[in-house]
Length: 399
Image 1 (cartoon, one colour):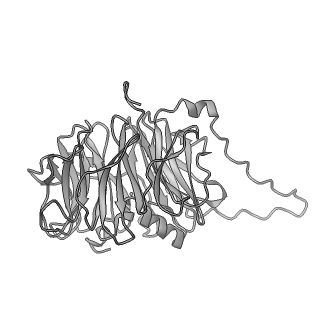
Image 2 (cartoon, rainbow, N blue to C red; image 1 turned 90 degrees about the vertical axis):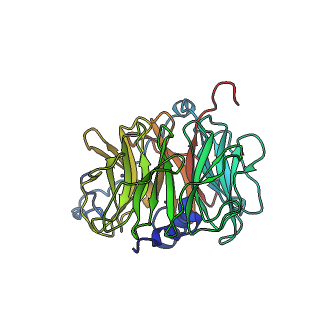
């Protein structure tokens, strides 16, 4: 894929909608928006049973988590639902209660991450598939307020660790000449607007370090998509990777010492790990380089001890892999009834994940334990329910 092509897709890639559409067309799973012994691409055929053998009973469904366990999971989950014939943001508790619509607009809304204090989340509003896009701060109780001007593209918003400012990717800024794609910063009160990059080739997918003192992003300033680090004010850019192929989807480990990212440097999309300060990168899995096998959407657990990512190996349905980073052991999570499993999102305590399971046109949010067990359906509304993102439990003194 050409170096810049990965970043030419509209917002729906960043917030997984376009990947959702691709899934519906190709039978894949929703991802952008999104890191291990080799997994088989298909289940091996079993020998035929002799004529006298009894018929094989179907495999029992996975045992769900008890309601009592789910009631103890902290925080809530935001997600996109199309039940009202429009993409809107909803909230739900891990036990399935308290489901409510958070946004209500004539245009589409896409959920971003929740704030560190659990009081709000970032939302991007999109007027049509190709219309203007705008970033909003959406309190869990209250009216949304804009954090920037309307633009042709707004993607990858994220909060600083203290929740006081956000960064995002966009193609235009306040009173500035429109750019192809650059990184912007703004306070949650709308103050301190600043453009952090300025390269005609484009800058994408910013992630803030756990200390809030630096930002890692993808930049094509050298005619290939590579990882760069800048200070939180946009100064002192440092190139972290240097390969003839692309790197994208950087994610910090919780202690800020490692980066997970995706690269096709070896001819196929694979998840890699490297020091956050730069240096040699190693594979997070041991799969071969078959281009049809894709690793995507790496995400560290809150403890940093595990890494989850999506594996697509057609013709088998997509699945989620959970890697123990201390010993490399993997847990492979698959969906029942040949569902496509994707979009892993860790709970704040790191003991559970929310995922999306897709079967044809139906998409639903599920929960599972970090060891891969207890797969439990959370949403039931028909149609599309996808892009689960955890919102921390409100801090003491907040609702």
